[in-house]
Amino acid sequence: MHDIDPRYPMNQMDYEYLLGRDWHCEDGRGTTLQEYARKSRISYESVRRQVALYKNVLVTHIRKEGKTQYLDDEAVKFLEEHRNPQAQFTTNKQLLEELSNICDGMSKNAADFCNIEQLRQLEHENGSLKTVNQRLEEELEKAQTHYKQLSQDYQTLREKYIREKAELEIQLKSASEQVDFWQGLAKIQAGHPRNNESDFAL
Image (cartoon, rainbow, N blue to C red):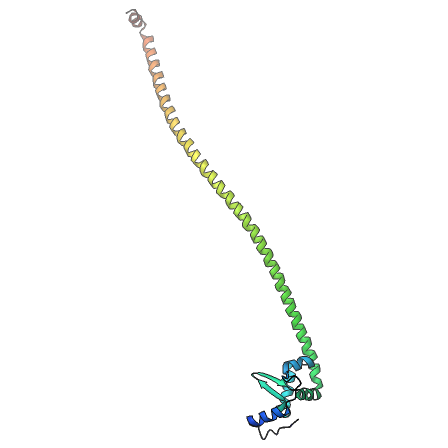
């Protein structure tokens, strides 16, 4: 493994030459920093710092495609030999934090599931309420129709009552006038009996 002197930076041609010469990887592809962190049970940030620390040593054993960096087998072995023991402790702490985050996420998912169940229950209850409301609206419409019919019947009966009352008042007035007439006539006849007899004789 070559230790590159930072005082003499390589040009692209030198880098490609050393990379082609020193790249050793059984699968040819290499291992990403994320994959190495997961296999080593340490954090990605710890791997990134370690690679940055030894970048001059690992420069020909790391290749980059886009934003992804790949380590060859030599780089993986080197990083394992030079790993800081503190990184494992930090990783365990971070794993606990990640586990806690996962638990929080599961709790949130469970809460969301409960909310979904509650929403479904509310939708079911809302459907029942819609059915009840529809039935009440139908009953209200029937009641309004019945009330309208009763109002029309009442108006008809009222008009009939007013008309018959007026006719009865007219008949009553006519009968009262007839009674007054006959009573007056009876008084006149009672005051002139002879005239009445002669009238009858004629």
